[in-house]
Length: 285
Picture 1 (cartoon, rainbow, N blue to C red):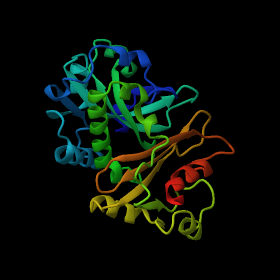
Picture 2 (cartoon, rainbow, N blue to C red):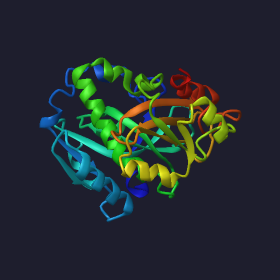
Picture 3 (cartoon, rainbow, N blue to C red):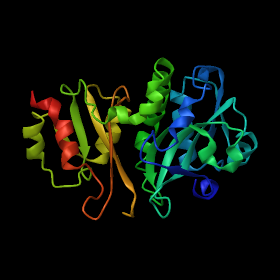
């Protein structure tokens, strides 16, 4: 959605979910009545592959509220309506970045102040989707699971409002119940050298380095007792950029682990040694 969303930049900080000010979560207008409100899925509207993948994922897996599809022109006309939510892809820029480097899949609520910018809309959740200017299509593997993760977060906030404050950070020390599951890592997911022999020893034979195609197959098959890795980072390592690292259940599409680190000359993209230790910890017993 390069041409359509070029002007819609979500400015992101490092503290809350993906950066909206915490006071936005103090508003009385929360997510209790989410199922009674329409969610508009903003698409490019030109039958692009990006549109088709997102539309198919929503049609098959979105179940928390009524939904409709709209293009950017329609979004501009209705974004002030507080009765609507909007699921869309936007360029995200962190406070120390010179320019956006990542695209996020975000769910926001209509706001009377939306004319002043996307940052003035209530952000429910944003997930790192893909590096900008990356046409590999790797993000399509995770589109449907991300739809599920967003809905699961809504349900958590409805049950416990604290979840709105914590956001995805609640999964930074996750891995509960993971020690009986096999983990599939993509070949280039690590920021340091890792061999299959290391995985065999540290994960008791329950972790493998595989191709991206096998990860996609595991998600499509909803393979039981399996976790898959997802590492999303900018193509260019600029000052202030973050690398995002996730583990997702292949069968239930639940988020098991979410971590991020600020990239630097010494720390590039990929899972760090501290991430590796955190993930391997449950398998030590």
